[in-house]
Image: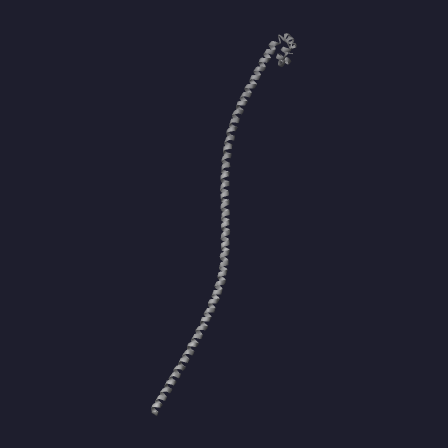
Length: 181
């Protein structure tokens, strides 16, 4: 029995030692696990810090990009306004060109009318010159006739002077009175 008790005691001690060693080995493995976990935690912390710094840089870059986007949007709006102004000026220029073309057409029509009138004036001047020459010829012929009449009337000069004294004859012969005397 003692042996039995001893065996039992030894068994209990062996189990205790086994439990102790297993607990001890579990403790070391837990310490190892704890060390691994601490190492992993520190590595994850470093990664988290890197992610935070990257996020901060991205946020900063994002803010800069947002500012750039706003600046570019403003430039696009300005370009659109300039484009609208350019379009209005282009329409104004087209309108001006049409008005200019209409004025040139009117001017050409008026030039043609002036040329036609100049031709007519030239023709009328020629007619006038011809009529003037005819009038001068007629005046000469009339002057001849008057001179012939006066010379034939010189024979009857005395009776005409008598008639000149008469008022009725005076008004009739008035243009020729100077020639008669």
